[in-house]
Amino acid sequence: MDAVEREIVDHVFVLQPGYGVGLGLHQYDGLVPDLSASATDQWAAHADRLLGRLAGLSDQKVSADRTMDATLLRLLLESPLFDLREGRDLDRNPMSYVGTVSLTSYLVREYAPLSDRVRAIVHTLEGVPQLLDDGRRRLLGPLPRPFVELALAIGGGLPSHFVEAEAFAARGGLEKDVRSAREPAEAAVARFLSWLKDEELPRAIPEFALGAERYQRLLFVREGIESPFEEMRRAGAEDLAHNQARLAQIAAEEKVPVPELFHRLGLDHPAASEVVSTASAFVDETREFVRAKDLVTIPEPVSVRVEETPVWGRALSTASMNSPGPFDTGPEGVYYVTPVDPKWSPVQQEEWLRSLNRTMLRNITVHEVFPGHYLQFLHFRAGRGSLARKVYLSPSFVEGWAHYTEQLAIEAGLGAPHHEAEVAQIHDALLRDCRLLVSVGLHTGGWSLEKATELFQREAYFERLPAEREAIRGTFNPEYFCYTLGKLAILSSRSKLLATHFDGNLRKFHDALLGFGCPPIGLLPALLASASAT
Image (cartoon, rainbow, N blue to C red; front, side, top):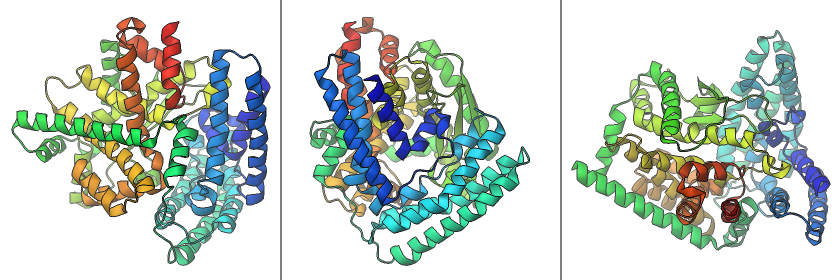
């Protein structure tokens, strides 16, 4: 079992070296995957052989924990096999290529000398031309229009990302090394984007849906869920109705229409120069709130740095958390908050600041830092689980936990007795409910982008433009159901087990939950049942 585990994990990182780098396995620094058809065919064939060897272990006597690990290893292989063979990502989604190019891990955390990190940047840039050439050969048009348009947007941000890397290298006098690799990489990006714009965009098609059968399969390979996706859709609809009812109740108590509740939040926002300092203050506040309420253990040491989102990442991010991986040497996390763009008009700047009002920014900080993503990854690092558990990252567990903590904070009294904090929390919950419903609708129900856009406008109270962007995201990222799916799974387990197990103590429940790592959400009931029995 140990030998098969090691070989499977190593094989996964051949196809996804960036995944390994993100976990803190820096032997994969600077590696760009070979995404040519012949290379991925060979990768898939060996993955099939490894799955066969793994299945053969079921006849041997292994512990219950290792049986669970075998399931994780199976999904580690079946998930990329699904993308290659059923989702056909490399044949129809140009984002699979431009989205592979990231230098962020080398820029944000001082895990090694600057010269070593610059060397990884150079190797990555040197691999870009071949990567994009393979993409042009593999992408079999006509391609889905949303995929082409998003690839153009993402690819358009790469040159500024490369320039940022050159500026980073200049700290050690190594900017020429990066420049020599950057210029051919930028030229390759320009060729790839011109090809997409001139040849593929004019003949792009609207079809993108996975279909019901592949969507059901996606739920299994990503989250170990075998129950019908209709159950997930129904649970999401019920959560949406519950949140809408609570919002209506608050509006009735305040004697104002629901939109006025959101308008009020926007009036209390930081100045443009205060966005980062306000977020930093909320990091301290939420950390002390978690401690005071004894919600979950905070493993020490703790180190969070708050910075402006890099320029190249601002188009797609309001705020984000770059957490240390389980194999990283230090605990430092970087909490990015997107500032006002000085090029914006005064009206645009005010709109952005209203969206980042103090109450919403505090709710975002709960999600991203304490007790959300950063705290979760501190537990992930501290865990002593198997290799399989150290490398498995379930989107629904990761995002589900962070989304759950927003509700947890309100339950624990954040912002009480006033309603503003709860209104902000419900605002984000409505968005995540709509994402789940749109995901199912777009990929299994024949929904149009217009119908999806209208749902975000009606149920999440979004303006037209952000509603359209959310709908488009669902075409290429059906897994944005993960927020609500994960939150509801955690709430369900809590309601079933907390009263009779874990001494009825929330902190013990949460510590046990985070002690599992980031497993598929479909395995959560079995894991918690096992933990509560010991």
